[in-house]
Image (tube, rainbow, N blue to C red):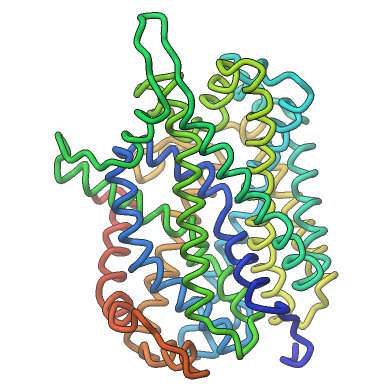
Length: 463
């Protein structure tokens, strides 16, 4: 595909909102709050913010700059930097290939909950066993997965400027307004339980934001740090080819550093607000015990919280799941785009044909993932100690193994082979300032590779 024919974002605002839309997804709305609740709230957030400004910044800058410099999708971009490292492109493309089907499955769960609340049956979603009862059904999860996949495919089918950019410009501002509104409401909550103990949203805010170092062992801190680092891959969409693909659509005269800073700020604010929506509300109605719900926080604990709010809870539930749909769709669009753009560049296919191929693949494997809770059910012990089904195995492979490997090889390529100057020159080619240049060089050459090695050791059960 020639560069002249290549699509592009119409401006930096479109790029920033699309990239932020990719970054702000289920990783922020679903994963961030339950990790913050599990990992000592404020301490997790402190680790996350420090890592976002250093570790995350370095990887995000690298991938966007590689994309713009090569004007290629992830599958072919790394080979353009150095032919010996073209294998990184294969690994980077494999990540969204694995993630797409199960992301559509979870997106289908969100659609189901939204329809449950908007049809006035939110109280049913609060019942014990509702979530398990739903995902173990054979047909319903497949139907909702199909609807979510259709929303994603149509957007990608329409292209970069008419599809991805257009939907991001509409959905992202609405999403931000909803997140802020629900967060503010969450802080006004108060509840007195059966034993007469009154808990408030502001008390939940304190637990969420203020780091508590008491009774935190080195092992505890290490787990929190690794969780925060693992979350960053999810939160800013790095090591999965997405930012390389989006970077390839950025015009050469765009101020990359300014755009990257805006993406970082937008993503971090939404991640913090997602926790602010959820953690204080769960604390108010369920106490500290409810905050240890883990991955089930959004689908099991929150419906119970909404039920306890009465009629207001139904409205908040509708708005909440609507917001999660927006976040999930913009992210899933970027995941599909990373694969579609790779097929377009590697095999010279049209966007329409590439999108149809990827949609057919996501449909078939998505059905298999849905059936993983009934027809194909099994329990497999993973190297990190957890027990999982098909969705969990896909999640483990993509997030615990492949994404750290992509990031590690990228650090070797840019830090030591092509040298950081390759990225620095791309970022500053219009005379812009690279404000965190020293931090960038140190992170890419030394700090990020060491941290990723530790993360990989933890993933395979060595730590």
